[in-house]
Amino acid sequence: MAMAALRGASRCLASVGSAAAARSMLRSPSRGITYKLFIGGLSQFATEDSLAEAFSRYGQVIEATIVTDKVTNRPKGFGFVKFASQEEANSAREEMNGKVLNGRVIYVDIAKAKLDRDTDARPVARGPPKPIGND
Image (cartoon, rainbow, N blue to C red):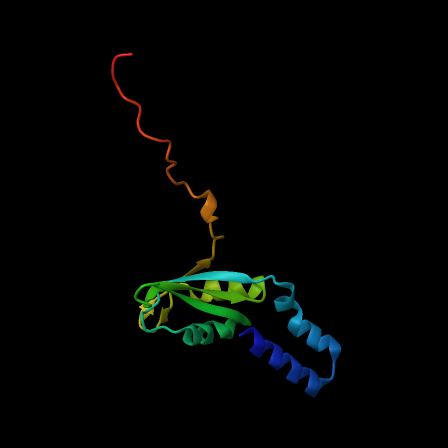
């Protein structure tokens, strides 16, 4: 997806010839700042391309991913869409939340940060249990 955006920007440069126009096109992806939306309730027939196409009318979609099960490689029913700007992401969230996509009602919200796996609350092994009895 990013390569396609770069190719589009280079074509724009060749046709327009304006450095300012090219900088405005490349500014948000090159800074690494993206705005990610969580999309829940996806159909098992949804693809990343159809997800990107559905959300592209609200702004520049940097990336669209659908989370799949590692064993069966089937979609889990949710995914993420990254936008270039916060305004585009908010517009897409307001317009697409509760809409039907591929026959299913989808739920759109701002994606939350992924928890660090090292800091997850896991039980700590402290050795064998102490015997209960007379001291």
